[in-house]
Length: 201
Ligand code: SF4
Image (cartoon, rainbow, N blue to C red):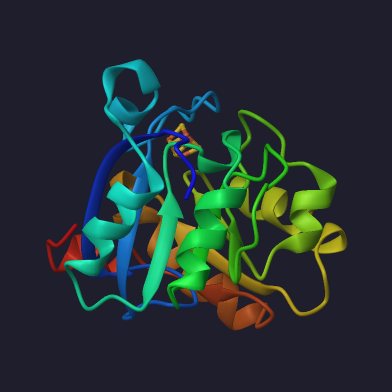
């Protein structure tokens, strides 16, 4: 058992609201620390890791085991800034299915079952991380983000699931555009932040 410390903003058991696993009960580990700097980020309080507590893998495991979770989503912040190898080994050996949500700006260190890459204009994703993506989820803040999303198609693996998701504060304007776009371009799927519509974490 490792004594490594992981900076974490919050941990909670909820329902995955977005993307391929929408509706799946999952335990979320929100890492603290992010240097990507999205202007529309809805968790800016996660950016400074020094403002949050750190936990050992056994403390994290104990929190997860208080719930009935089978899936664990490692998110942030930008969780791929950290070496997750030992944490992933520990969680996997306890039978959990591991997901990560990352901007792709870092190499992922650790074995993860489901990799969701959500590239950001503010810090480009790495080619090797894009290639590992099981799911590409592009947040659309402005209509010009749609052609930008298309530029990633040639950089992902052929089995990667494709999602366009309206940025929450622009959802009223962007959602109808995306409904039309995915109907015209059915390789894409629409992802909505359903957890926000039903007001859960
Ligand atoms: Fe916020 Fe995520 Fe962007 Fe970091 S990558 S600034 S946590 S939206």
